[in-house]
Length: 84
Image (cartoon, rainbow, N blue to C red):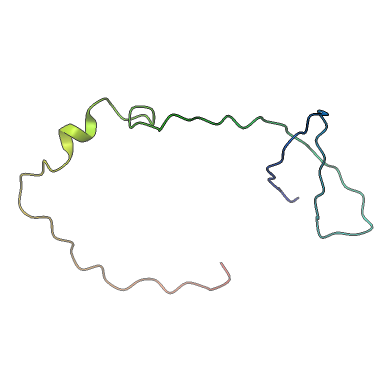
């Protein structure tokens, strides 16, 4: 199964026209289409609109009052297989 996401526009005729290259030939396919309008917002997202409590950053930014934070030794990183 392959999932393809497209952004398209419906013209004045109300018809959505799709042309989707799928990289397959001479096969039967089951196609599922989910239509969801894109809601554009002119409002800038505020921290509150993103789920942060009101005034959170004003109360916490620059408020560290302890010993200086020092990043410790990170050690060696794990060698990983290139194909994963």
